[in-house]
Image (tube, rainbow, N blue to C red):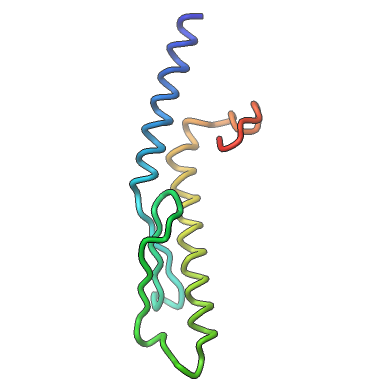
Length: 103
């Protein structure tokens, strides 16, 4: 029983470490061949948005809007991949098996 408790504590420490790593990470997403770049934290917070002047056409604002949305979505996809990479090995099988939300 003591060994099981020790393993659970080690796993909790590894999860906390992975969560801290994820929170401090930043990822980027792009759209339009790099015309728009969105940067998010590992927690999904948008921290930067870069728009190449070539993407700005006052006659076609809708395309720019679509590019911004696509870049943010791409960055969110990258956050999901990073989370799976950092947390997956630690939570393998726990989320669905135990019904623990967020794992």
